[in-house]
Amino acid sequence: MRHLISLTRQGYVTKPDYATYRNQTSQFDWAYIEEAELVQRVANKGHAFYGVVFSNHGDWTEIGRWRSALHISLLALDFDSGKTNPYEAINQAMWCNLPLVFAYRTYSHTESHPRFRMVFEAKPGFVSKADKKALQLLNKFYANAADKQALSPIQRWQGSIDGLIYARLRY
Image (tube, rainbow, N blue to C red; front, side, top):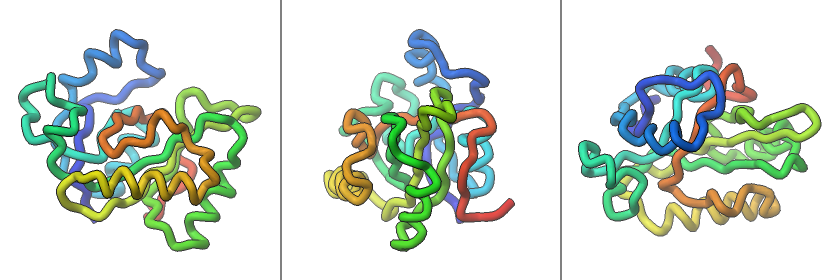
């Protein structure tokens, strides 16, 4: 399976500082990418991604704005509280047949304070407010445990290094 997303050209071995994060916008390209490669680049090689592509990709001031969001492939939930067990969350998704593509630990993860991200397959097509509603419903499924500041289909997500917890495809 392939996904049409926006992906950075390079990975980051540590969590980018604010200045790097701000400059990262010019590093995004459209990527029609095989799922196995996507998982490796995001969860294990530190590439940042958007689950959408933007209409004016050459105009970096438009990246991450609703008005230029063109096509969606992925939705993500961010679990930062440290109170959600990633393996239980993954099992719940599998039990309920949710379209979980992969899950990975973030740079801020520790064993005593687990922080992770779950990436779900979206219904491919034009980005709409229905995608935001889908994220809100996914969050409700997880008893509102996901970061409420990051419930946007056009959110930028930072990858991780050797952070893969789960992938629906085996490599």
